[in-house]
Length: 175
Image 1 (cartoon, rainbow, N blue to C red):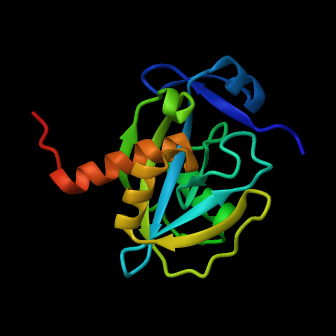
Image 2: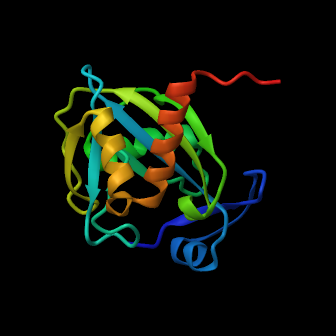
Image 3: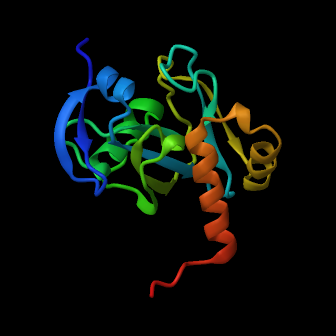
């Protein structure tokens, strides 16, 4: 299989070039990714435990689905593709965008759109990407992240803090 090619972006998230995955990560180039949070009707979040074969965050708990935006792809297309490839969830349209994160160290220099959708599963996990997955109550995740953040991918710790904070404070007014 040939190496993935990513769009390289500038500080305004505008495409300025392309490069192979390995080069993008080695040089710390700005690029794009998505995270999709899948909740069930009881308000539980499906988390995946990343495979030990992954190149980053091996064996860490992470968003329901996440992945890089490929060359020429947009965020919404990527969200639909990633939930299908990783957990076998077929979406006919992009889930709701709930949060945008600027590229930073916690995201691995990725601009990230976080999405939210609902599904009851069951899911068909891609075993090359995911060791296992489970449903967790929001309070359980918050306590777990606070007590043992090292068990999670760094980006998820950031995302979860922002999601919980937004929920606690309600929608932010723009000036």
